[in-house]
Amino acid sequence: MQINFDNKINEIIKILALEAERFGVKIYFIGGLVRDILMGKKPLDIDILVEGDAIQFVQFLGDFVQIKSLHKDFGTIKTQISGIDIDFASTRKEKYPISGCLPVVEKIGCKLEEDLIRRDFTINAIAVRILPTLEYQLIDLYNGCKDIKSGILRVLHKKSYIDDPTRILRGLDFQLRFNFNFCDEDKKIIKEYLKNPNREGLSKDRVVLTLKKLFSSNERALFALEEFYKKKYYKILYDEFYIDVNKFKSSIALFNVEDFGKVCLSYIVEIRKEQAPTLKNRFEIYKYFSNFSDVDLCVYYLKTEDNNAIIYFKELKNVQVYLKGSDLLGMGFTQGKIIGFILDKITEVKLAKNSTVISFEDEVNFVKNTFKL
Ligand code: CTP
Image 1 (tube, rainbow, N blue to C red):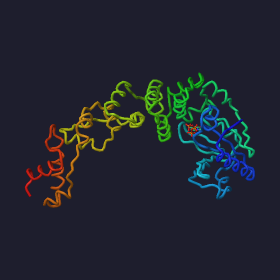
Image 2 (spheres, rainbow, N blue to C red):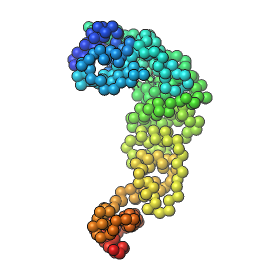
Image 3 (cartoon, rainbow, N blue to C red):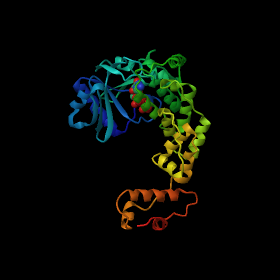
Image 4 (spheres, helix red, strand yellow):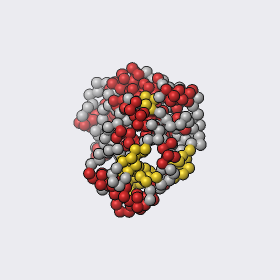
């Protein structure tokens, strides 16, 4: 197998392979990197799998490597070598005591085959052995190459989605990114799982991380959301979930949100059903929404249909008070509650429809005409 890295990376990989031989471990490319190369894409990250203990191997490499962080329990270590980010992982055996929980590592430094079987899809379970001659040996125990060619997503064992339901969402991501499809068998298993998902031990953090990745591209966010809803993937997290895609599109336009991946993510993750509060006037509306980002406003509106969010966005959001407390002290007012009271009054008058208090000078005049020193 041929892999064309640039000279600098080739040089580093050659040294790593020689050192691995000296240390007595085999090293491989694995996962997304191999999949991307086989699909003719430029790999984004360099991940190296060590058939053994990756942390010990990196420590053996000494000054050649700069360690950025390490995760002892998982045997993973992030490094930089001559300015290139390279992540090392130990081969590991895992088990899932409860469906959806974070995996528990049973063994670090297991055989390659045992590491491959813990992975998500056949397309991500292809290893490439790295030799010091820069020859590369493909190890495809689960016909991942065939599945890449046919655009098929297939798990490695029947319990895979039950162990880790985020794989359903990862599958959706690959579906949208690469136009891949779940194989019929997997479609059946997913459908069955979603009928009665066990969320008892579910790692919500892991689901949110996977959703973040799924919604990281604006281009695909709305498709992802539609599929998430139509295929009932929301059942991984909740029994009930509802979206109206047209309403989504119009709200995104209404609040001029550019990052609608963030809207989708926040809409899904924030299960809290917003209760629209009773806001009596424009000042209260202004105060209530003042910490909301445009994404928050859009999500809030989608959940509540509260028109106050639109009033805030269109009429109040950009209202600004120029006078500061220090200016008021300079005008002769004394320190204390009165300062906040006056600043609130200025805000209130500026928020009124067709207010004539606009500039700094208008504010000063308003204060002089309204409050006695
Ligand atoms: N993996 C897994 N189950 C998960 C997440 C990841 O088995 N829930 C494994 C897969 O073998 C995957 C590898 O860990 O290939 C690395 O995962 P990640 O970096 O998240 O994704 P990539 O597959 O590398 O793809 P990309 O970064 O392009 O999305």
